[in-house]
Image (cartoon, rainbow, N blue to C red):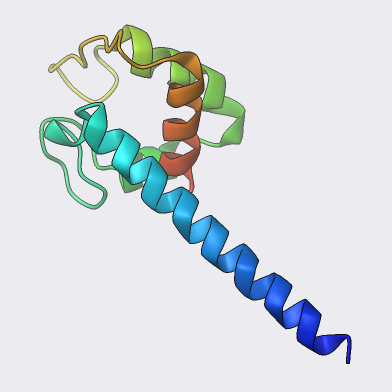
Length: 102
């Protein structure tokens, strides 16, 4: 009898995590991140999967700061411009989403 509620709980957790992924992708679109990045191929900047391969959860704060303040020289000569419209909370959500693409 307890197996049914557990199955429902696991199904609900799956739906909620899928919703979070969609929400973070929507946030990336809303903040214009996908103009220069794609999940699986280099556009102007590196793919999110390449970023996820290079960094770990220990780098989240540094990456969130780069999302807001920009960066240059890490992935080549083209700088990533600052994105002042991204809040620290949004930057953290974006970074967690990107790093989940391992």
